[in-house]
Length: 117
Length: 112
Image 1 (tube, chains in turn purple, brown):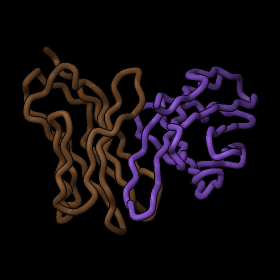
Image 2 (cartoon, rainbow over the protein chains, first blue to last red; image 1 turned 90 degrees about the horizontal axis):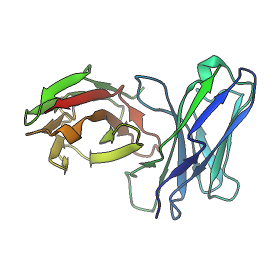
Image 3 (cartoon, chains in turn red, green; image 1 turned 90 degrees about the vertical axis):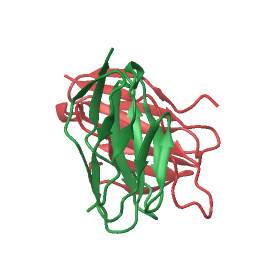
Image 4 (cartoon, one colour; image 1 turned 120 degrees about the vertical axis):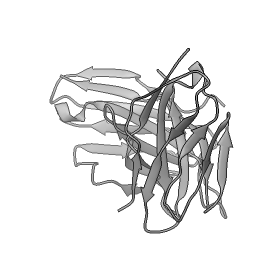
């Protein structure tokens, strides 16, 4: 178990370009989450998957954002037509959900820092 | 909606001092409560948790007690070390909901 990994760790892009981030969760975890963290703030929830199904999306996730988890393993987060306001740390987390457990610990990756110039 | 409010930072203490970081929450139901820590250059790590009223979470000398009557989950440590320097986040998760709601974080610096 190597933990949650995210690639790339840093991304600098010009406004209007598209970017894609990848998250590889802990291998046996069936839930995967995306959060966004801006400087000096706590992470904010964007979306989550159970296996390959995207079950919840935040209002923060505008039409320019799309997330996938095609085989229930790794996930990608794509931002189209990036804006300067998209500059943030994008965090991925995973957890193992099982019946009878009401509180799930989420394990976080190191994040991808996006800078839009 | 659900929210978490943490004490304003940054907090600077000397080694071996007593630490308290205040956290209060607003929730419609009975949430689970968490403290996460972010060391420089690293991802968020779960420090401790409590899932029901009067539960005490503890880890690495840190403690927090789930106080339903005051809607609080204050983080304490009796004697801090330089290695405790990090950003600490209080968070909640509503029962049946999957997302974590975080406070804004408190940066802690411990001087030798």
